[in-house]
Length: 214
Ligand code: TMP
View 1 (cartoon, helix red, strand yellow):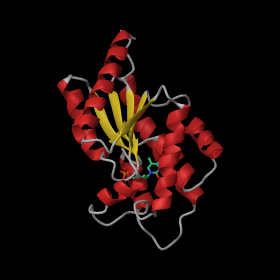
View 2 (cartoon, helix red, strand yellow; view 1 turned 90 degrees about the vertical axis):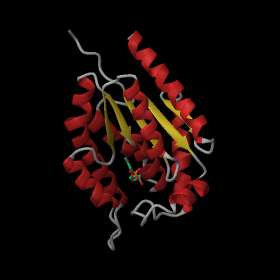
View 3 (cartoon, rainbow, N blue to C red; view 1 turned 90 degrees about the horizontal axis):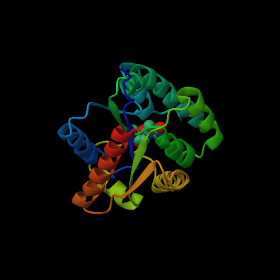
């Protein structure tokens, strides 16, 4: 019997948009439906990729070259894909990933102003044809997001960036969501949580129905 490939769902957004709370909602929803899934994150998801994450998030004296940052992110992604994501999908498990390559387009492309074509080349090299089936984008004005995130401990190397950086991140996410209307679910994270989660549940239901029909 051939196993149907699992669904690959990613959660995206800038700082303070409520990713963690909504991830809990998504995983509880999947558990209630009896869906076999793996929850993971980027950068990270395997021991090596988690070490690369630490290197990336650590604040340091030395200025980090944006291209070095980009390559470390894709190194972590290559490891994560081969060790965890691809095998899980092949076994029919759904993979719920806290950030993926759309974050690279937003943070390294938008935030750090790296050339989009370079990112596309690395995406092709590392992922081949693999893309998320659905990208949930929690969208929020960074003014509000940064205020919400301000009380959650010492800022890491990304969190300590200024408002203009996060405005570019948001603009890049918007641009991608417009280019890929089919794959993106744009969620207004300024709405009350029950409304956000109602939208998430509706979208998850749609994915489940589609996957059953395949
Ligand atoms: P997190 O705080 O959502 O766990 O993500 C860690 C940080 O890594 C976050 O500030 C965004 C950043 N990041 C990138 O800059 N590029 C990427 O491709 C990914 C996956 C994350």
